[in-house]
Length: 489
Image 1: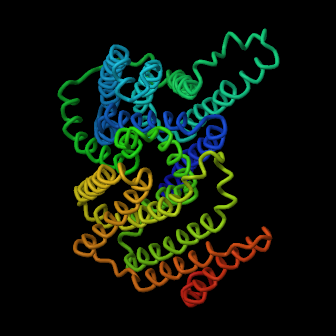
Image 2: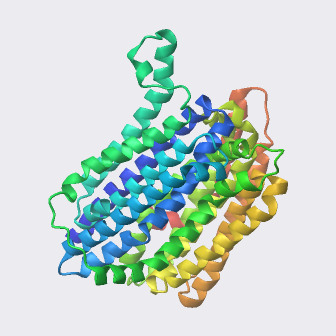
Image 3: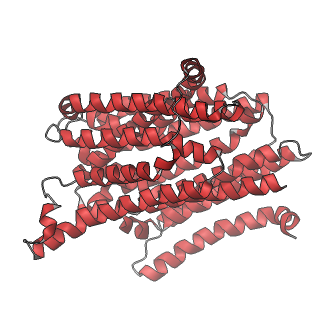
């Protein structure tokens, strides 16, 4: 019991710091969309899409390999230093390559006048890849508080520098041209201050982690490294496939749109509106942190499969409620982003539903985790990546960012359906599909009714839309009355 309490406590800290971090970074979106034009925000989204892929490449599965080998080794410090040296060499090599070819890379990414963006983010990626192992060691040694402090400090510094460099510095210089801040701020850097802030925050986290690798005897075991690489390379493939499902369109869009269309502007509009689905994303993240330890701990229970089916049903209910809430209050939620980005509001229902099906997919994933058939997880991720890339390549030239929103939804549905049928073959769970389908259909009908409620009086307008959400919840309570009584009485 004490072990479970410890696990639960650490999960809250790790999960809480991660979710809080995402939530805080999310608040940079309204700041960026008011400070920058869509084509400038498009550059930020484009660069960070590449960063997401590069982080997976530069860690090449070594974080999970470190957990695996350090956990079973009699010399965990040697595993740590071997992993650290390996990542140091690859990170430094990457930085050197970036600095040599930054001009060519910037031209290929279609902002040839700013090779400094490439150098700054190259350094940031290298730092983040390198520090992934000290962070992993903190988790292995059960030091969640230190982990959270370092992570949240980095996020706070990043947010603070963004606001200071992008908003306050130019404002102060406008009112006082001779201010000392003129030595800090250069108006020609512009959107580049986003990358500078990120680089400084990553450097500060590295400094905070110095005690975790300074003063240690650096032992490098080549044979151990080869074993770790063999273990980790499939994880690299899975990671790249999963990242393709989430970010590939942000790389493809500027390349595939016709020359007559400003690709970075369209990407900026798409990326900003994508963020409006954050409530669904945060719900799924919170659910993931709690669900995995839950289904492993209940695996041997007599009613475990019945419990899993109930979890699925209630996930669907909460997910559909969030969908209705965001969509029926989108007239208010849209003020989260700048008015220059409103053309992209039409993608929001598709992104919300895409996240919703991703959540269902994660709920279904218990079958291959509990049966040790994790290779299926890799195959499903690859399936989703193929669908995502294929649909984006085929339809972005004609449909623009709508193609990316639809691809996100379709790929999520395909992965969910494939996982369900495979799961029923290898680890059958009797999910209440009729009830789930009923709630889904009712929610969609109420959604179409709700979005067509347009009353000139704003108060009455949203009162009526609130009633629509309450009708859905009332319907669910009516259908689940017996089950709810059993659970809570």
